Image (tube, rainbow, N blue to C red; front, side, top):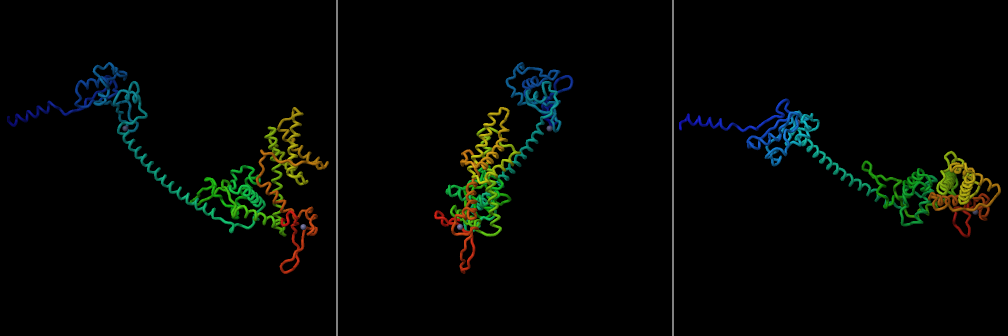
Length: 474
Ligand SMILES: [Zn+2]
Ligand SMILES: [Zn+2]
């Protein structure tokens, strides 16, 4: 074979096998095409036929053949493997390229029944790849950030725990040596301290309950006063945070451990016996010390206990009205008169137990009165109980009738510091009581007694009026 002949043969062969190209068709045949089918190059002709039927559209854009009518079509996967379609009316929301689909159901989902729907949510393959990459990167960034945050939190938790442990160990190390010897910071801290001493004596193994746990009546019946008193005692080194305080007691702010005074449980620094001695010293000072400071504190203590007594009787009357009779509480505008009536009774010499009796009788009388008077409502009965109480006290004083002492019932929550405070006040006032002075043979009419100092100079001191039963008691 000559050179020329070989070249002709090569050229003929080239013409016979043109380079493989995919087969492309658009549907519907007439009018604006809505779908372009691309069938892979080299697809056997009978499969290509099936593909064309599968993708063919009628003029309105619906499928030209039902899948079940396409003869020889075993499974649609065979179609998807070699062909895909571009939806010419549904373009990518980002780049406006036609959306590519691999089967009819996707085509309908994107382009609607007639494959002419404007796409508002789908991305083309390229754009969704880009979006996926962006999302992956974002996810990774967030995961790394979260991990770093977790690390920071772990370190912070460890630091916080260390700071709190330090605070707790400092609290546990507090001993009586450093404690202030007497609480002269005011009547409320003194009264709460006396009450805490009584509390600790009654339950030596238990921590002193937190303000939160004790609720609204708490120590003196006033949450703000109690909180201030507890803080004063704490900073005077007289009480320390109990190691069995709840976790909510502690917080770390700017790396520094703090405590929530209302949540903390307490212990008496130096224990109950030390506190009792402190209270006795304090009481002795208030009883016997000359001068303005002690006089002012005595007056403050008298006023505090009186306020607590008045509030306690008022609270009891309100409890009776609301719990026993199901009436509303004494109306706000009558509270001053109620307090005035109770204070009048106490100042006239009636005991707290007798005042409880008066309150009980006042509620009882008002309720009976309401029963007899049909037009009278519960609110009026509550309001009337104030007047009834004032009248009963007035009448009893006028007629000098005997009034029994009642114990408040169990449902009535008395401030914890009321009884210890009452006792503290009585002990403080006893050396100055005219009756006690009159009954004592050791002192003069002012309750003063002459004693010798170390250098044998006689001075006047306040007599403690010792009795055979209490030879040393003030
Ligand atoms: Zn796109
Ligand atoms: Zn005396």
